[in-house]
Length: 390
Image (cartoon, rainbow, N blue to C red; front, side, top):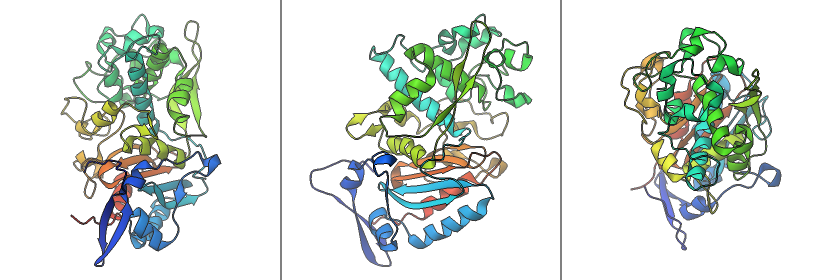
């Protein structure tokens, strides 16, 4: 379904019990929430409003609420947004507005999105160096010279995002965090010094690769990763609460931010909502449209299962993932999830997701670690959307 913003308000229909439910399609497309300090997301409470304006089933959302509360015992905050309205918000211990706890691997999707903005700005001549996703990544990581493995020179920027770089020491039990010497393979630890495979030939889920990406961003933009992310993405979207992880390094490396961050559920939803709107926020193209389009499909040709979790490698795109491509490995099923859905799960039950065909955003933030039923969460949110008349 293609969206437009006509001068005359278009009408979208959904049928519930034989009655037509109307939603202002163009109004929903034109809506962007002010920062939380200025009122924030508009929120629906009454069942009739949820049905009429958000086009969601209040009874199914009530069941979804109970499922969220029963799905684990962690403190969390979760939001479901449709047509620009919060149709469901559930909090237990965490504030959806202000609690900026760690979001684990959700930060990978944020990082890739930030790097897409950096690439676009670089092609416009607005940064010290130019960078495209097909460029060699280590051309922008001078701190890694001399390379601990000559194969690193062949890693492209996008391979850092789609887990095909060979930088995946986690598959051997190596910690995600450490000093920059450790991450860059200069500490003497063979797990980070050597690649697990030749770049582009396999798939290995990697936090280390995204740490490298934050350094790429710094070289391209001439700004620390956190500062550029704040200026280029967070502030334009009205995000007000965040923190970044830092690693220290020795002589010649120093202290730099990694891609790791914390952010409240409502602010995470702004990033997904921007992606849902093809990268636009109000009248500004914040995230490049080409990036949003490319996240809808795999960005590599690897067909063998991912090394660590054994997932279908084709579920991985630019930092985001494609849940509808899951084929049942490790109980991760795609049933009930639309083909155009993008999400990024993070350890501990963190989640950011958007579904263009449903005009739907789902986020959850816990600050914890451990497994969770990510696909079931997204499936239940999608199931609560009222069926649209043809």
